[in-house]
Amino acid sequence: MIAMYLKPFLDNIETVGRISVTENPVLKSDNSVVDYRKRVEQNRKRGNRISSLTRQARQKAKEVKEYIEFNPGFMDDAKREYLGRFMHSLNHCGVRSLYREHIDGSHLEYIGALTCKHKLCPVCNAELSKTIRRKYILYFNKHPELRKDYDFQHLTLTVPHSADGFKGKKLYADELMKAFNLMRKKKFWLDMVYAGEFGVEVTKNENGLHIHIHALLLVKKQKQNRNLLHKEILLQWNRLTVDPGLISRELTEKDIKAIRAGNKLITNDLVKTLDTRGATFIGLENLFVVNDNGVKRYIDMNVQDDFLRGLMECIKYHFEPFVLDKEKGTYDFDLLMEALPMIKGRPLYRKFGAFHGVKELNVNDRSLIREEMAEAVKETAHDQVINPCTLKPAGRDEFDYVIMNAAGVYYKPEENMKPFVSGGVKKLYLYSAHTLIDAVLDMISISLCDNKKRRQPGLHKKETAILMT
Image (cartoon, rainbow, N blue to C red; front, side, top):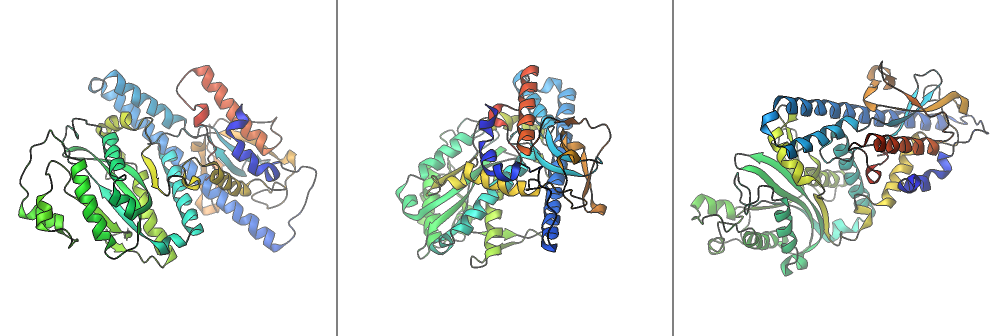
């Protein structure tokens, strides 16, 4: 039963994961030494990343616990349960992380971790962002013709809302996505937009929750395609987002000027047809990047690195930790308590158009997961296990597989990111695990058994995943 959850992993590392213990090859050339040195460096970067993020998750769990303890009268049982489950996820993400420990106990190789998959967990949010970005980079590198045939544009959609929400609903992400889905069925959209993807972002302002969409569009090339598409989206989005509960108002000269800005196809007569109870602004721009000073620069599509930076800028909004107070770096608990019910069980990232059937761009696509895992295990799964410090072959009696909390593993920058384990960290040695695959299966088996015994919310079978990105 357990193996079915790891089939992509097993299929790809069967040859490299079944560590040979009968052969004892030596590094045959300087190139081999350099290659293994790079593997060690990359492995330590991954290990340091997961450990740092796991410690962040523990700190956030502490914030949640303190908030629950000091604000008992400000939440009902449902909100308390949401926060409690969230705290549990943060506290247990990365608790079971697998390492290969060499004989002296100081040479560690990070293998992978079991993660909670919560949308607001620092560990899982960062890893999902990395995975999605990797998917799109690989896909567009594989299909360079798309950059020649289509213009890439960044669409932003909002709706009129107040502290009471939109159309009577405080949490209106579903209404927002429904309206966007309806617009994508319109003839103008089908004629002009080839493919794309979008994510829902949630922030908070003086008018309550501000839930909006950021989308990447591949637009068919034609003269003034941006202006033409912008005009049509504005008209349709205005109609689709009319809130009957609002009172119509008259647009001011300032409003009209703002609506017409940047698009000469939008006339005063067209603006007069807009219903002020619906959205009167949409953002549609070519891909851009923003420098450290907040200055926007539109990218050159003919320059590969520039294109990739613009692409990442467009899709980054899907994975920003929106419940954080960016100035303080702590949770905005008012926003958190409102957002937790909204995001539970709801996908906030989707593809459309020609991308809808592209498996390589699916969040849980197995083929790409296999590629990522196969690439990642190159650091630790070889024909022969190599000691990361001596770069010499290690026999099976010279290392053990061990499970420990990633938060307790640190890396020394002054010693080439050499890992060490803080005192008091519990270690579970998998003495019966003869191979890397055995160790991975043992880790998942132990996790599932422990969770069943405790009967607490935790890592469910379908949520378990090896963090190999």
